[in-house]
Structure formats: structure tokens, C-alpha cells
Length: 319
Image (cartoon, rainbow, N blue to C red; front, side, top):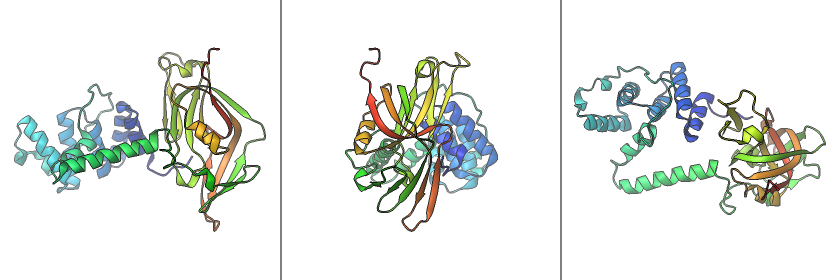
């Protein structure tokens, strides 16, 4: 796969998006120990803080790194007001704080804290705050739709298949600004039938011929009471507290639709659909600019990058 960001922090943010706060806490704590002066990580640490004491400790570290940080000062002031503490005498302003996060699960729900709360508190003190809040909410919503929702927004986003020139063997594909070389694992066809537990778009410009991550499961792997699953950074994770060796299969498909019609069918897939997907297994995809500048390689490792030649949603899987 293609790694483009520091792994630990990226995984922590992905865990937050999935609602796995305990995993995010553990990853952020590890990152803070490795890079204790990373301001961005300290800001995200607020998002997983459990108590006011933790928040004060984190804010102290933020202000020791950046004593004029407006958002941290505003957040600390509001925290002091809510607890009746005189902000002028707070020792946190002197930056005498250490990392106090512990990798334990979060029990509280719906709290407004952390980085998002810090940004929101700061922005509400600006002129025309309602407009800024609306804009921020819109940006968050658009980002979520773009990266997590299986949609092309009526063709406004996603790949333009009308712009692609594809060889008969699908081993070379080109567009106006890029071309790709595809290496297949063999000449046979693979078939995947099962319940979808995750579907999301792939939004990587260099490999935009790859359009979807689709997690197809059977038996125990398709039962959320037995196996928990998640997909982060185009990789899947599963765990089970019920069985050590779950029955069935789990496959993460990275989809390369053979044509526009198949791409449209992939856009119809939702979580918990039963699907049948067939196609050819891909080993690598190499991306180049028209002047033959090499951009990178997508390597299939532990998943199933697939030239999808047919896809169907099975309406009555028990029949």
C-alpha cells in the first residue's frame, strides 16, 4: 500500500472517526512519548482526554510549546470559568505539564472537548461567528462525505471513466495527465460472495483508477456479535472476544472497475448488502506522468486488488 502520513497519528485519527476512542488514546499516548514536542499531537490529545485534570495538563504542554496559542488560551479560560478557577493564577500557563493520558477506554459519550472543541471555542469568539461555525461544519461534512461515503455526488467527484483509454488486456490505462501499468497475478478469475461490512471510496489521485474499498465477509466474520471489523488506510482489522479462530472468510477488495457501468453498480453497494463480485487479481499498479516521471506503486499485500468484471447485489441471499 501507499504510506503518505506518519502511521501512528494517522491511525489514531482513523480510530477516532470509527469511534474507537480507547485505541486512539493508546496511539496518541505512544506518539507523544516518541515525539513529546509535537504540537499537533497535543492538540489531538485533547480530543481523547477524560477529565478536566487531563485537559489542564495537556493545555499546559500546548502553551509551553506556544505560549500565545489563541485557541489554547481561550479553551483554558473557559475551563477555568466552568470550575471557578482564576485563570491568571493557573500554573498551566507556565507549561509545567506532563503527558497524563492513559490508554483506557472512554465511558463518556457526546462530550465537546479536544481539538474539535478547542477550534469551536476559538471560532465562536470571532466576528460573524455563526457564519464561521456553519462554514466549519460544512467543511467537516464535505470531508466526511468525500472520504467515507460511497457516492460520486452525481458525477461531481470520483473517476471520469470517459477520460480513460484502456488496452484490451487492461495492462495499460491512460488519461490526459497520467498513465498506469497493471501487473496481474494470473489469468484466472476470482469470485467473492458475502456480506459487506465496509464500503468506502478510495481517493488517491495517483491511483484514481482504484475506486472502492469493499470488505466482504462470510460466516463468523459477517456477524458483528462475534467479530468486530474496521478498515483503516486501505487495510482491514478484525478482532473477536468470542472465538480465537472464526469460521468463514474476510476479504478487503480494492476495486478497479472494468468500465463505467460496473463503477455505477459499485456506487449502489451499502453496508450489510450481500454481494457477488468477480474479476482478475492485480499484484501491482504503477503510476506515471505523461513524460514517464514515476509517481509510485500500489502493491497488493494482504488484500485483494481486483479488476472487477461483474458485480451484483443479491436481493434474497437465503433463496
